[in-house]
Image (cartoon, rainbow, N blue to C red; front, side):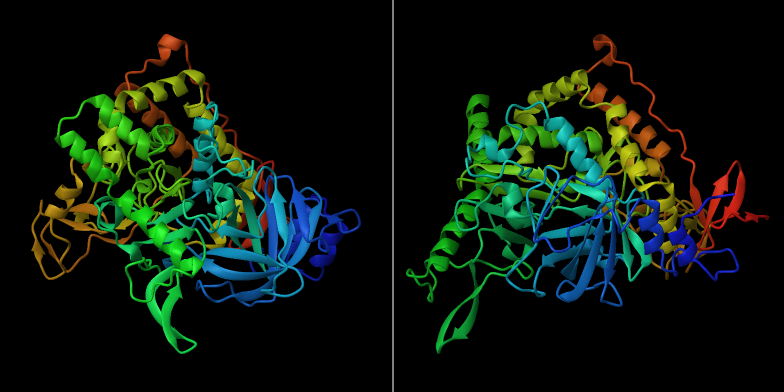
Length: 607
């Protein structure tokens, strides 16, 4: 017989069927009880405007006061948020919720921004929350991670990056830049922990509670022109080739900038404040309504000149290469323009994790003096073979999409860096392998830890709530077509686009090829009007990731000329022991014990 607490018995009294619908019944009480919440002994921090907590192993959140989660970035939903850290600490606060993200806005389960307030929603008094070794904040993100099976790939990626930089004397960019007033906890990239989220007492989904891209976490000051932080599509067409496309990226710092959009104010034409949600070109001192007495106008002019200067860095380096300057001169130019240590570690991390999505959009660039720029990771959901839509997995032999593992996306400052700092990258990789900071076991320990923090029951909850997640299903490919992962080793980006996209009016003969949804398809017979697939999905698990990581490191060892045997390194097996757990079937919670199935009140279920 499974023992139950009085609280659970009371919550589920009257359910004569013995079934508790974990998705539709009030399961908030269940989760509080399961993880030790006791109203009599809990440390209730609701009345405190300054909250300090150790980082939770896993947190539990219930959102009330709204009937549905936000779906837009500007909804400003006023709600209440109950937070329990699983360790006896609880609070309930006013919050304003908005949907968050870019690509993820197209998914049914969306990320959210959460802003905490004290006396009134949107008021001046915010809640200061200090979590573990994070910088203090009053606003956080709840990342949905809809396309990644573990619902925390990005957070695992940040942990791996922390491992890689952990032996550096000055691991943080602000340390290398000599910024004395930066917060000592500024990590320059997010941190996160797993979080069960409920809506009005009913399970809504697994999220990662995460730091935002806030200036304080970057060690930046909001009103200094030299403290510039760029976020968004930072690639050749938008920035690195000298022609700045201002609408493609967001200037997150400094604050109170002005853009070229004009408005009428007090009977005169002036410039509108810069809005990162609708970015556009900054003003400068050549424009007709520029006011040299306006501090914001002057600040905008200075920031614009810094960004324009950055946009020419790659071409300046390229000019030196074309002029056949010596290696020392080119390396010195790099060291003047970019943080070389950070670029080396970022590239090594990206090789190891297959972070190919982090070289055009999902990387952060910032400067402390308007001259030298630093790079940091962000949004690492497409690592270890994950495709951004979650519909298939890349083999370890590829770097990402159409690039073999021994290639790197050559965009902006990365282009010449691989040639002139190639041995530095290889040496750094070998150093990290020798120290064990890069190993299959160290990487898999992060995956296992994250999985165990959520627990198998949590994953059961998640995939019963979100059964159409593309990372937890199987593709349905029509028999008239076939595809293979091996083509990623045969085709480049150009090769992919040399093929025509699928056309439902064309007659395909056996052997004909076409493209659809980032895959190459081959007809197995004569067909017309039948698309290659009706559904694309994949099923992920710890075993798949471990196999991928093991193969990736094997390939990189060869590429970087490293032999682990020479250093006596032998990879220990990772812990794959399954946990004893509860299960959910047909949206109902059951308990498996000694191979038998029981309802939550201890009744044996016979199938």
